[in-house]
Image 1 (cartoon, rainbow, N blue to C red):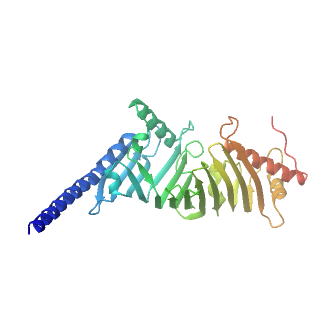
Image 2 (image 1 turned 120 degrees about the horizontal axis):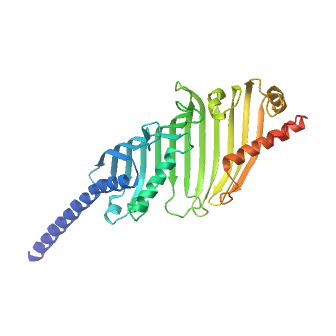
Image 3 (image 1 turned 45 degrees about the vertical axis):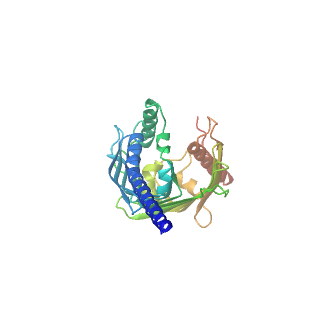
Length: 352
């Protein structure tokens, strides 16, 4: 009887201890919401979060609503980032020992506005520099967020929106709107595979009325051990006239086309194979292109089916001060055009 009594006492004590540990663990997990909100708000200038809540008996999910990042002074839109709903699923046990593994990060209907002002400053760059300056003043770094040890394993974005605004190219309105953005990142946190993460992005170009006029497909395989990634990109646009402000051509533009990019990028270099295809391309205007009538240029570039295809390579090293990807792409495009036209006996005037 005495032994049985001690067994019962032991079981009750163990149950009480487990219950106390459970309540303590739940309390720790619930306080994670406040820790997360404080750390993120401190690190990111202009960030506000309407609410943060936990879900689950053993809280394994943080739900943040009404997350916004205000635009810096001098930019026209009110917000740079708007996240109606952010859901983080994590392991509460890792919270308890001071580590966090974010199993899932889900963003519903996020909106990002990338705006460039007349001085060619971008709002996101200004925000990033402000965050770094704030971290330096506090004697730390952006690693304040890393103290929470938020490690994404899966990131899912649904029904996203991206607006490119450029006050030089288009003083009012959106230069390049993208809708129906869907993003998925699957990361291998074990480190056992050479292929560490797979990233996929899909979206639609839309016109000013919001009607789809093109598609975006981006796929990348990221290799942490090599600090590099492969990229496969296709941009297809069914109404090139919508790109008129972006291309800044002195002609009225018609037609459709697509761009394919396949390459490799790492911390030291980039190399991409680029193919540009224009179908039913028409340029309306009288201005010659470097001394050559524009219609003659188009005739020299078209194949027998009336399609223009230009393929070239862009490569360089990030540490080379003379290398800029955009400038390199434009130079290679012009060089390819010149070579194609020279084969037809069409030569541009040399510009000083």
